Length: 485
Length: 96
Image: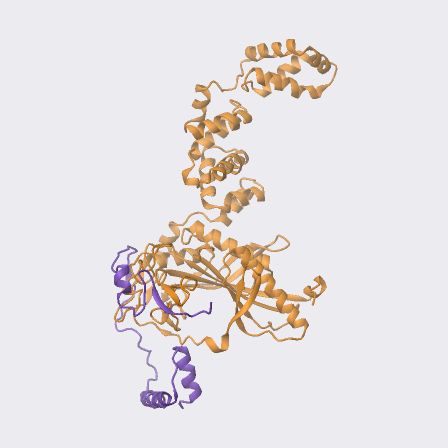
């Protein structure tokens, strides 16, 4: 059956996302073995993460702080009193037979993540809760043909699970929501946000109903999407599958489905009724947590400026375009670098152009992070000022001084002076060059005099060549007009 | 509470266990025993009492985020019935 736009438009998708983020702590959630991706199998383990009998979990301080940061970033309420619960299920990569999680008292409740809807208006996606829990180990099915192999390095790695309300209406909004979450966890430095390596994971709850309907359609959970783009594609596929089924009068089964990126399809994994009986009960081995306002304030002090705050500041106060503000705030390292540059110069637009243009293309070409960029923000700010003061032209700054600063970082004015690149605003010197240009190009000079003003560009070009780019363009223009006008 | 065969099957499935006919009868008798004991406990009047979850009243028993290596890979794998030099081996849980 073909799904026309007309049929699609009859329906309203309802989407909620569950995001798991691995915390960038040094140790695991409830034990002090190393939390690190990519180590040799079963080397980052302890008696606790291996689930040996008689061992007791101990809560990592830092996980609590990281979860509080995320909550503060999206305006959640931080729970004063929290306890832990056991979620029981039997699977080989879960050695204890249960996951320690926060079922009853999640650390954060409420808050919202702001995205833009299809019309470009701000839309808040409400957050139900954020709770702390632990990751399971890894089952490897494709190395040994006769056995499944288990690596428990990941067992006990701290996670926060961020659960949204079903406020997401399109696959594009899901894409934007996830992009925003990833940006936030990276700004906060609590998760590396790498979906390919699984440090950020997303399950999507999707249902479809007729527009204006009062009751949601049958909900299906989709798993196993290892990029933000794949989440978008899986949701799109699932929406279409639901609409087609409903149009045909078929029933949507309540089930968990697996996304296959190669075929861009979802297939049933297990039916919910049969499998899910987690028999939650309180975890008696971990004492409860009490978080004081004083502690929350301390965590808040250590937080960087957040992207939505910076975006608003750049567009409202610095008068940068939304496009520029978007690029500058996309990556924390770029934004913080820019923040430093504008401590030295108040030409925000020019500073933004340097950071987004020359600097970013250099970083991309060399494939290096901002932390390895040779030029300090102060030096880049000084370069912006040098141009604004008329001491060098933008071209010369970009083509000569910037590359020289990359080679040998230092004060740009000194570099320009050492290389004899400072613009000449010595009228006599420029006039000397102009006289040479006039003598060498009599035909063009004649045409210019006769009103062919577009030859100004040619004359300036010749003059710049003679002065090796150093002539102050304003003064040169004035001189040309005075002599030949 | 009645222990039905369906209930046994459900609980066994959650623990990935299987019972044959005779085992089924034995586990049924065991479970009935346990349940009747719990039923007896439930007769105690607990009105107005908070459930006791923790053995102490301590809060914020927290740990610094400082790593340590307490178990080597060899030690981790030592007690496993089936393993190679790197991994625990278990029966295949997914088909090819």
